[in-house]
Image 1 (cartoon, rainbow, N blue to C red):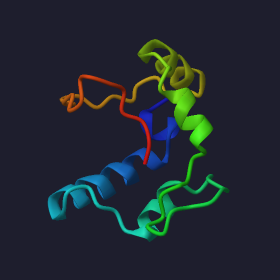
Image 2: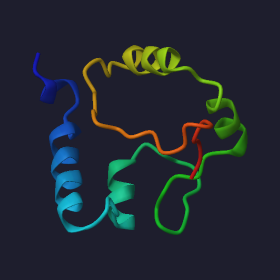
Image 3: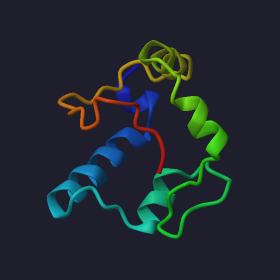
Image 4: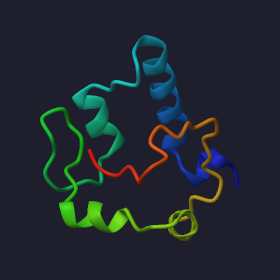
Length: 97
C-alpha cells in the first residue's frame, strides 16, 4: 500500500504548501484553510482557521511528544514527518492560535 492510498490528500497538501511557501511565508487563503480542514464542524476565525476551545489548548500544554505520536499512529499517520524545526521559545510550551 503506497503513501497516496494511505492519505489521498497528502500529495495535494504538499503541492499547496510548497506553492504557498514559494509565494509567501506560509499564508494560506481562507478558502485553502477550509479546503485542508474539511472535517472541522466547529466555529472558525475570520481567516478560516478552526477555533479550538481554551480547555483543549490548556490540556495540550501537558501532552508529551510520545503521547502526541501515539495519537497520530493510532489514527493511521505512521510516516508523517517534517524535519528542521527550530525551537523559538525554549522557556515554555507554545500552544494556541
